[in-house]
Length: 250
Image (cartoon, rainbow, N blue to C red; front, side):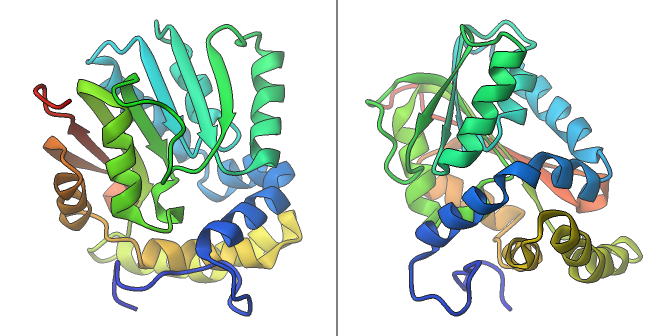
């Protein structure tokens, strides 16, 4: 499959759109999502998150919207820093419910709030946030450019976008090891732990079809972002992208 040209959906036999299917899938796997994530990434995802937030904090944001927040892992990690308000925004009610439980347990209700919504139609006015983050969520957008354009709209001029996403290693031997793990091991473990085979067959397909690297930076540029940049983690298994809203944007 060519990267970025095919809309990959979780449920092959369904005629519904990707957005509806992704919502259904995440509602279905919400309870096992955290355990699976950390197990399948061997815990490395926590290091990637910390590095991403270190870059974010160079901008000293006061308000952040965490798009596709899921169960709020990224939002909770951000809350360790002096950010006044973090909004966890997601399309899946069940994922947000688990995020809310975690936030309540950590007593972070004053710092983190949640909002159910669609990343391609964000229910906030223009210029609302100092920063926006998306961790492992942009692969699930139905229309990637529309999603990035919406994020650009709700950012204040000079605001930063941080995107952490899985990508495919390009060099031997990590390329081959990654391919084997992602296509054989991961769907097997995912199915056993979540009792939901579709989600973990969809994951490698969605990564393979995501326009990672410079092609994603091109999409950020099309959406209006300047100062776009990328940094690869763990031999290219994940990539950190960043972009800034123009100062003279209105």
